[in-house]
Length: 135
Image 1: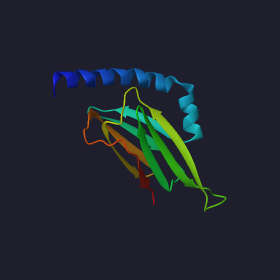
Image 2: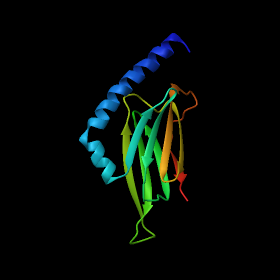
Image 3: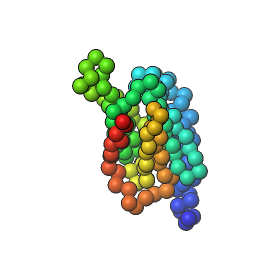
Image 4: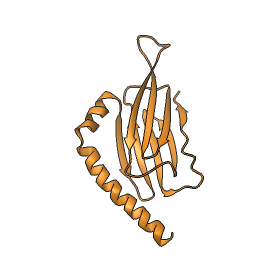
């Protein structure tokens, strides 16, 4: 890893630490957890991890859309009163830096969506969104 790359990684890590402090102290975060679905964010050595917890609700489909410094997570639920009607619920997770040039992967299981965002730049990253079907 080059010295410049290491400096960028350290700067992102410092911004992320400050962001996390503000994010979890913001009362709107808890409100959104109750209104939509709970989101937890962790920092590991090589990546950032976002967990979206759906508890007792089972989405039919989840879309992920990176957009600059944000990641939009939209879960599509069948309405109980009208099973043919889909009810989308969206949550946007902000970041203190752009994520469109990072490798992003996701997996869904046991009512938990786990999203992994690499700390390293990825020249193959497209910044395009995708869907996960939860059957």
